[in-house]
Length: 137
Length: 137
DNA sequence: CTGCATCCCGTAGCCACTACGGGATCAAGC
DNA sequence: GCTTGATCCCGTAGTGGCTACGGGATGCAG
Image 1 (cartoon, rainbow over the protein chains, first blue to last red):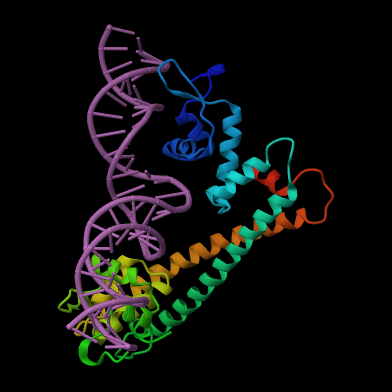
Image 2 (spheres, rainbow over the protein chains, first blue to last red; image 1 turned 180 degrees about the vertical axis):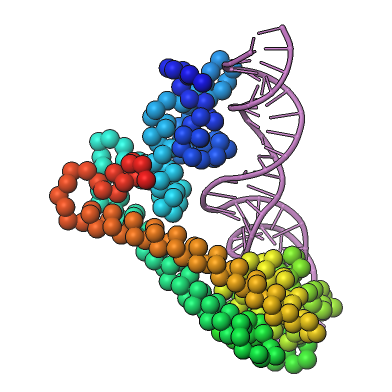
């Protein structure tokens, strides 16, 4: 298991970052991860730079940023021109999307739970859930 | 605009239900909407049964139910065996999915807003958003 | 040097649509 | 009756963000 200076295999990198192996190849295909060095036999060999970058990507994905946003964020994170304002704009836009979805889901949660509550208890002949779906909203 | 007994065109049906025309054809292709009658020239001709069914589907989609759930709900809504218990099971399962997503989004909202707040004001040289993405979570 | 885990690559599938494009049909006006 | 412009036909491909598959090559421990 000691790989020493040779770099990590794609499986090791994926495990280290907690992502699927195929996802790493996918990120490389779409240009989100740079192509790594190769062994004589053609296997990918990653170094710590890749580990850090993949961790960044995974964190951003976990926060719900889209691939194109992440592409931009990675560019803005490049040493030299850390444009905090641009980063904040992207994050703010994403936050407002999150809030929109949040409000939407909260509305769904409300309607669903109310309707299901009517279902369990009242001895009505009709189904409240189906009635709601039949009726205009 | 008076179509009388001839039935609605796909465009009229789609407009009435507030869905895209292509979506209606998609629903027919996947067997969610039954194939309607056709005019001599091959155009689809819908009657009120279709209007009602499409409205049902749209309401269910608006509540976030998936296509397969809706397929089952439509079967359970068929006259004769309105199984309220099964309907409630499907709705409850969906509700708990909604609640899971809700909790997830709330977590994202919290992290994002906190981090962005740090950004606007403090005169630190580094970008809090990028720092968070770089650091382990 | 053998055997087995890992990796290679390209392609297709997932969900719920949406878009496109070239040709046919419909309905209204003249 | 004929023209015109809107609508509709169908099949196919694209979206986002992966995930799965399959047949062959490579890497490494014993």
